[in-house]
Image (cartoon, rainbow, N blue to C red; front, side):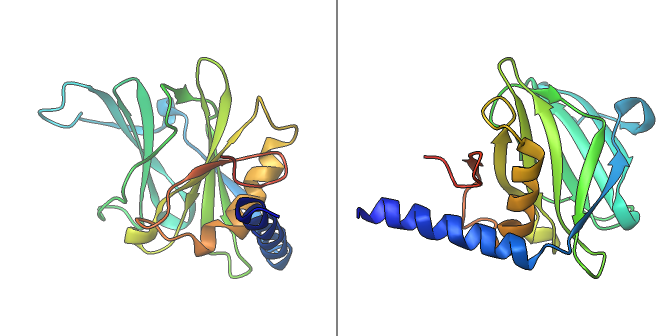
Length: 184
């Protein structure tokens, strides 16, 4: 069996073993509709930024949505007035695809990941973002609604099984298929 196939089989097994171990994770939702979020001044000197909004998140966290260069970006701060994480984005031109941000919580009710839907010209894409210390908040992966029968379920498996161990800055986010396996 080629090394690449062995790797994919092992990743698949690890993903679903980890998802089973995190079966106690639950979802809660916060509203990120721009009309209910507080509009902020665009970043000075950035002519591509057309808007920025601050929305309340889970447990006092802050969610920042930024429209820049025909894309929406999302970043997080642990509390009001705190520094924001690096921005997560879907790698296509996009708009927000939902006003609901899904937070995946562990048994201690701490967020381990978020899931946010974006719309592109051809697809609806779920962005999975790892939560944790500020420097460890980053995009983990994407799930295509067009190519996946149950995209929300797959995104939750990635959020529960992959996100907690994902190494921001060392690993790159990838697309996951209908089985929760990384796509090439």
